[in-house]
Length: 492
View 1 (cartoon, rainbow, N blue to C red):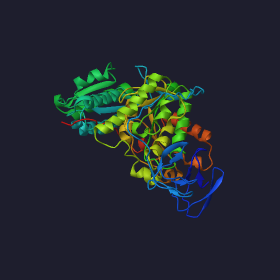
View 2 (cartoon, one colour):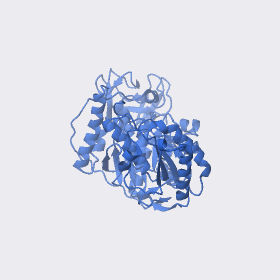
View 3 (cartoon, helix red, strand yellow):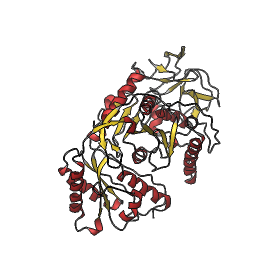
View 4 (cartoon, one colour):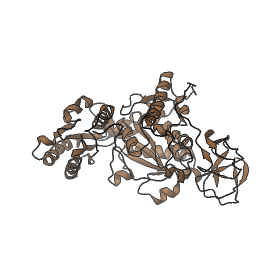
């Protein structure tokens, strides 16, 4: 296969491999001769498109032609532009999305005393403020010598915030820190403060809520003669508490998986993203939960999600989700549609609509059951939408904070980053999977090489269940653990 037409109504097709000028290819039952070289992952016109006319991919407009485009031409940023505007008015037009059905599936996980379940049994060190980041790292490094039983690792999560913040920006930091402290992948948590910060331990405790004193310990560095030694001793107590815990069979109906993409290319929307959409339907069919985020990368495809909302209240929340993010851009005097990134463009994505229509395929076909504010935790099983930006580290951390046990991350360019929870990298093409096997956990590129979608989705689902049962992803094997908070306000 040299070229792939995604939808019967498309007037473009995607090159599966680089097509030299003058090559005759077959797409959608008709032959087209390339007028110029079409790079792999990029688009070729299947018919003449006049200036101002819509360019159609995925059966939807991805922009408008800047100039007359001839059948066989390369279509990219030089001859197509976004057709999106600013704030829009939306009408609820239910698409009749049906809840997927499936069989009950089990993974081996950890039951927590508060009723939650975890897929890891780690000890986390959470600093309340960036001033004690290095102390947190030093405590974790020393304390790993005392790991035993089912405890897997002691991990510090440094960040630059917790002080010199105001208003909602400060509130969001406190909420995310509390969410991570309460996350069930941590069998024990040391909350490490400085003592004089805005978000000090006493201030943070109400955000944490009720907690098990055996699972959560607190240390104020300014009140300690030697905070590293004292921190290690507290970690030892947490290890003693968590080490006897055992994995037990747990229904996948209690599994929460975050959906994220980054460094997308022209293959992402035809391999990795729809594959993750199939996974999402499988997990939801088993009673589980998925969370889709990256609101700026819903722009241009938002109505597809809005019309899958289970009711009008969720539709209204989704409208607010979209427009609040547009207003966030406008309030900082930034262009709403300053996307895709240079890497996206190099990979064949031309406009934000092009990117968004591929991105939202990760949501599958299930109805939207919940719409979450940044830092809000999942309450309703099924597909949830979460307010967070497209930035990889910030969005993946937001997914973890909202309750995701695992994050599935699709990519056409590749990245080594991690998040507070296992972050599984899914490549959109086989070249990336072969070149960066130390980054990539699953290759979706096989979908343009003859492997069936249903078969590949089942393999991905099985790998996620294995990961939930303890199998480490590449970033975990490398020892990578990242977290990033969404900075939105003034720094004092």
